[in-house]
Image (tube, rainbow, N blue to C red; front, side, top):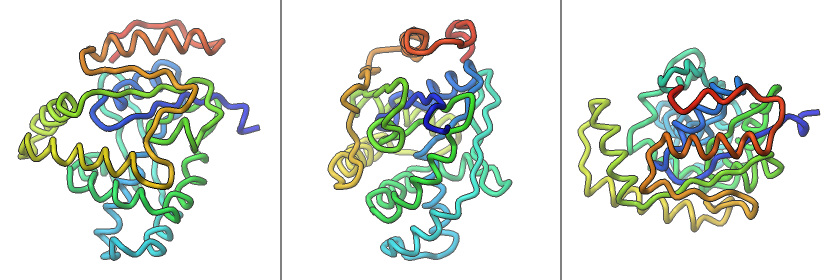
Length: 238
């Protein structure tokens, strides 16, 4: 049964290290991977491409139910590729404007309902690493291990600014900070699936932690909660 397939849910706002942590876990355990935030970003991209009114909740929900998305994890420190109908859209969906639009769409109940079935379909043997904002509270409430990463808005803005600059994007740090705070507010205050830790989640503040320390701590939690997993290779894998 699908419910017997283990899930590790990693939730939290952007810039906390979720992507790197989840990519590491998926590579280490050889599990499937779901970036739920990428699904909303892809949806925002499709809304633009199909000229759908961003306020058309029903039309957007219709698009959401037809997403053909795969996540390819090359490991060895490389970013997970997001593939939409054979097209690598990894870079296209990582702009701040796309993220802001995704946050807007995520507040629509019909859109979230349409994506719920699609998200749960990623749960396949031997297991799933689920990265998002409501993975442990809604989508996979029965997850074997739930992690909630957090960090200060200033630190997350600095990390995001560095990441975007390295990719060649021209970004303004003060404006980026404002956008991050605004998105946090939208995500926490929406009526459907607000951003919050699950009651049984392990909360880790990454503000002053290097990603290697986060990976090491979570890897120990994984070994405590799951059996029959590969030997821990150490944080240098990512």
